[in-house]
Image 1 (cartoon, rainbow, N blue to C red):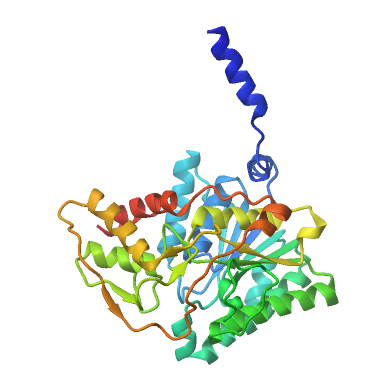
Image 2 (cartoon, helix red, strand yellow; image 1 turned 30 degrees about the vertical axis):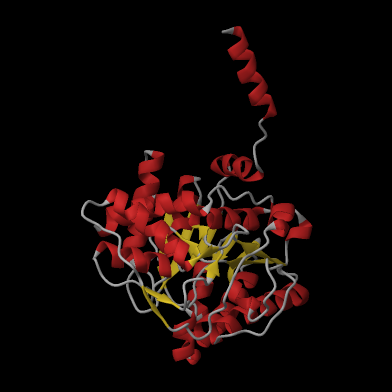
Length: 362
């Protein structure tokens, strides 16, 4: 028994809490005010849930163009269940549009940290309607920069995109790489980074951009013409519908589970490392998964969990306009400057995501 006790003590001494673990403990005892734009969306609602669990005050801004009230309700319910207490008093919702500067100003009052997630996503949607994408993703972004600057928020963290790398073929992607954007959506996200840099130089306003690489997880919408590939395939398999793969299936992506993305947002907002601000970071795993392997990964898990499902070959069709062939991100910069330590590999994240989809869609 003594040897077991000594071994346990040695393990405890060797264990060192990550910055993120330390930060979570600190936040629970030090309440701050956060604004999440796009709070009714997939990423926004997951940020809301985590911040409520950490005893933070949260303001959420959304116009429900692409988000859902049910996401907010579920995020609050899940936070309450996890914490075993009612946290709804820590949340205030502002129904508004980032295209309206007055809405942005209202939401930014008395805010410490802004997590700007509101945008019109989807490469195909931007190709079909570039004007609307530009109005939301660029004009709305500038409105949020101005409102946040004038409100003197401590940090402005915004959702950038891996699409900013454009046609640069080099892998893995490093943050200083450049390429030609392949879609209007990619252009808007690249312009966001330029604007953030200009605000840093001209107004001494502290910003950090997070280039998301194929984030997935609970509350990601499977419906609509522009649904992301993972929830779309899950819904199709559950409903015994045809699954379509664009191209030959060997196109690959760096899929990143939502909890890793939440971690990066909180680390970026609160970092005290001066060298870490006014930067952009990849949010990913530095891994590649082909669409063919992704399909098998999803199908195998669903067959194990849902009675009656059987293996079915997907249907291959033409490559999609505006898509890059392969995507993979270096995360060394995020590790070095923000102590980013992703907890979930794609297989672990997929286990969590499939559980949620089966419970929600079956």
